[in-house]
Length: 250
Image 1: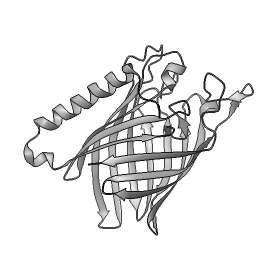
Image 2: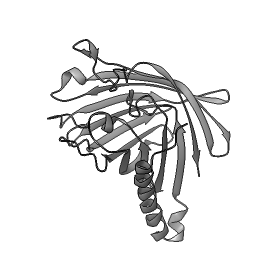
Image 3: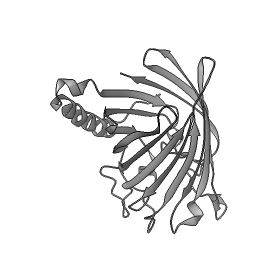
Image 4: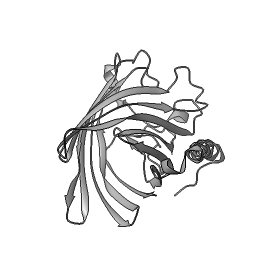
């Protein structure tokens, strides 16, 4: 796997340092509610679309959860902003919300806000995006809706875009099987709306260490005979493909 370039490293390390500084400022009782994770994937797919130009990416984050309330940070190396003329080498996500139960051990909910930030992007229309979301979980299945309160990932006049997805997690013998189906509506940019899907199998091979693999793709339109989402070389960034990942949580 290729190493991060120096620019990406500085961004990710700066964000990680800020997260650790926040953690150290918490009282010792709160530190027990912190969870960290680091990992890597063969291709960073988000809502079916490759964010890393079909190449590997390194990722990591930190979460704080207390009495249903949670906040967190997650980051990944990316290539798509550079591919459309920008400079951002990393995606930095910040989120917070509340999880609760409607019917104990059966039906639960999750509401919150998530902002995607792309430092030093240098694009005319900022790719930075903020969404509010709500989800219901019943048994192994979760139905979630995310609504953008800003433009969506650099699309002009796309405020009010929505993403709905249905996902689940099933224990099948020693592994977890996670099917997913979603639909992204890009407001006022209908040619870029699409359906995405995935089927991922994962297994915790050691305490905290999980490996995963599966198929991810999206059903997108073609514009002038070319994929709506394509790399500078013309490769379809949404074509169904095998992906693999590894993550360590501690």
